[in-house]
Image (tube, rainbow, N blue to C red; front, side, top):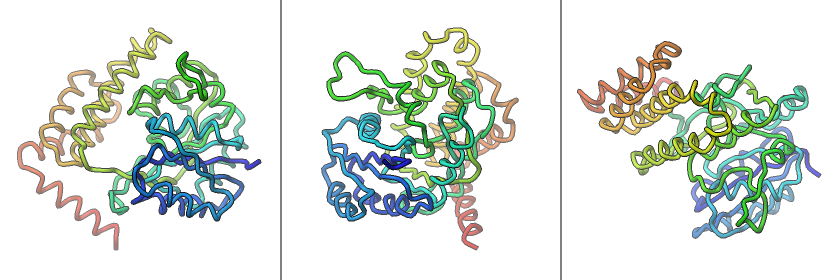
Length: 328
C-alpha cells in the first residue's frame, strides 16, 4: 500500500487538470497514489484523467455530481494510504510538498493535519503577488475560526486516522461515510477543521514554504463572496452547540476577520462597492482585527477607500508594477 494518497476532486476541469496532475507526478517523495474523482463532469475531464493512467499510481473514480465535499469524501473512501492529501483540479503542488508533510507527520505524532502556505495564481497560472503565509505553530480553535491557517483545500495532508475520527454517516447516506459535510458547497473546509479542533485532541501544524499554488477564478466573484459569507454563517450556526462558550467569546471577532478577508477578495476583483461594504461591516462587528493586525487592516481600508473614491486605476497600476518586479 502507498504511504500517501492524493485526492483530486475534478469537475469540468479539462483546462487545468493535466497541469495539476503533472505537478503531483513530479513530487520528490514518490510513494503515493493519485485518486482523481470525476464529479459528474460534462467536458473532457475523464478523458484527460484516463490518459494519465499509464502511470500506475493514478486511479480514476467516477460519480454523479456531489460537489467538492462529496468528491473528497469519495476519494477518502477509495484511499489506501495512511496519509491523505487533497489537491483541487486547478491548483498545483510544488515538487517538495509531499515530502515536507510526510517528514513532518512522521516527526510529530500528535499532529494530525500538516499544511503549508500558498502562493496565489490567476486563471492563466500567473503569479498574483499574493501569498497565504499562515501561522504554523501553537494553533488553537480560535486561530482556525479567526484566520483558518490551513487557508485552502489544497494545502493540507492529513492522517487517515484523523479523517476516520471525524467520519459520520447521515441516515440517508447509503454509499460511504462523510468527513466533509456535503450539504456545504462553500466553507466545507473550515467546518471540518473546526470539528476536529472542538471534538478531538489532534493538533494541526504547518511547515514552512509556499508549497501550494492556489488558483483564483475571477468569474462571478461578487456572487461567490455573498455565498461564501452565507456558508460561513451556516457553519457557525451548525457548530455553535458543540461549545457555546467558545463561540460566545470568539464569534464577533471571527466574523470581523471573515468580512475583512472577503473585502480583500473584493478588492482583488476591483469590486468597489462590495469591498467597501464588507470592510465597513468588519469594523462594525469587532475591532480586534484592527488591534491584532493593524497593518493588514489599514491596508485593506486604504485599498477599499481608494477603490471607492478614485476607482480601480491606482490598484491596477500597483498590481502591474508588482508583476513586473516579480518578473525581474
